[in-house]
Image 1 (cartoon, rainbow, N blue to C red):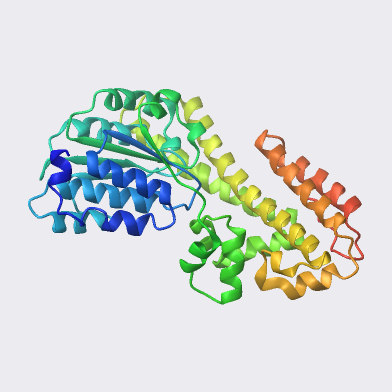
Image 2 (image 1 turned 90 degrees about the vertical axis):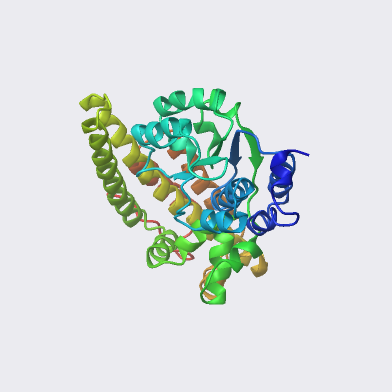
Length: 375
């Protein structure tokens, strides 16, 4: 057994890990084994959004820091706070749509060469690691290849494909699965029917479930139920413009700080950030519309217990009267096909207009409101 494992009181080192990975048995087993044998220098926590990667990373970091502390309980307590005052825990989240290049260089790459302020270890956590530009990932590579012995890096990602293979291959993977509906429900507060709907519509993503229970989330659901593509597109465009402006501001600050970047590169990166946000919101709206059609098919087939929109069963039942279940199923397929088209960077306006035509042919106006074409 390593000195690391011996330095933590028996039974203490897994308490936070067990709580953070209650519904992630594979991740719990891997992290517990790592603590028992001595943690590696780099980990890649990968899995769907809202699966608990952030909480698990904080608990794992707390145990690593507690192992080398004079007062393990106090070190663990401070590391578990968010934000954490522990000087040897560096937690880096993206600024806007992407990590700033200089932030990765200063707060991770350069800081990794400094010895611990207390205890014997330092932990660096990078949320949304896929949001690092290639420049940042390439710069981080040497730190991953030859880190000081006291450094541990934890990268979190919901989109592993966004990471360079050279980065991913130098990290030990920790796998996270989608959370079960019951776990998502337990994390939400509100009316039971709305909680049940948000948990099912989120696909195991706690953060998305919480969004769906906000005023904006309810608006997005309403637009999806009405198939109000014009309103959906307008909201997505406004969100994209805000994201582009925020990204431009952050990139300009980087350039003023000495990061070399042409005006054209800056404009292109800001536009990409805006488009990504716009597409994300459109995709969410379309996913909710597809779920509505799926629920209509379930109600039409006499299976209301299979519906996701648990808080709108009365509305679903009214629309499902006399409806051939195959029609909403085809409508759901048409919506899902449009989601795939958006992944190919097609024009959102044209894609939604084409979807409107397909749905008009698929679902009768006598049964369901005719989708609105964007103008």
